[in-house]
Length: 409
Image (cartoon, rainbow, N blue to C red):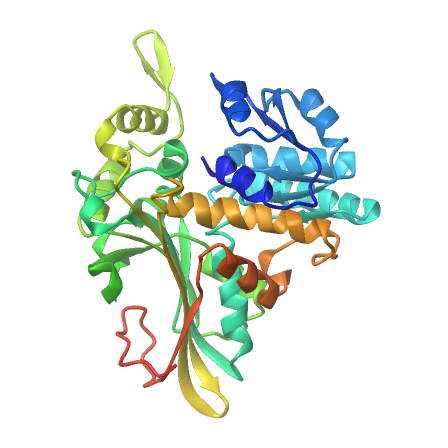
């Protein structure tokens, strides 16, 4: 889904001479042919065929990887071995992995890939989509404005425009359905009163974990739930001693209550169960069930919303201040691209172009925070995605649900 948008965008880069597009769904070649661009060469490849992938990657200057999340790490390893730069919207390290041994193995693999990429002088730009991606770029920009940071709340969410939230879940899919299921059952960490708190995966949607966020232009309050490792990102941003920090997703009210029950009943587990002669994981069952129903997908005239928001509080220029950077994007009904496609596919294409033109020169595995902000914001603006900024006097309130007074830009 997001790959089509990345392809559309990279085609607008006149300096690109050849684009090899790989996929394996029915009608893939015909769909590519309808684009009518002689620079595109379709190649039918199964992503599990590492030899075929590696062979194609060796011909490239940069790879845009928009496969399901489980492929992100092995494809990054292939890119490092092939000596070709890569941009991915995914985490290279699985954020939902709870087994300490496997987490350690992932860390070791990433260290080896990073070292190999550095030796070969290539860039592996990870997490360069919406969330992760835009949230990290905006987070760094906001933090840079402060003399002292005490509070950092970050939001990344995709959901229907209110008029399109017309099914029992008040939600429709714009990316991998099973990916959504898996993102709903992973532990989170928050920092409260300077102490790291772990939210068990089964408690992600509990009322005690939820707060509301009211953004007037969206037409009503949103439920917000912890969905990420705030402690890891505090370390990533160098925020030692921060009082409050959290990363959250947002949904329309009522969504969380459903998935709280489903999660606690085992419907979000990945371990296969035997059902008659078949073996199926509950997540796969849920994905197949919901994915088979038209009500969970967008009609042509319906729009989704992508929301990225960073809310930082502390001391700025000697005064208690609160600064909010925010992106609200909606589906472009003229092109048909959803907000999720635009905020994931466009950045991946942007990252590839920035590597090709020398805007990004750092080698090894790099994060979105290492991409020049002004160049990033300019490229988003050219694609109709606008970053807004608000600043307020801060009254010392640390909770994420603190309402914003009238802004002063």
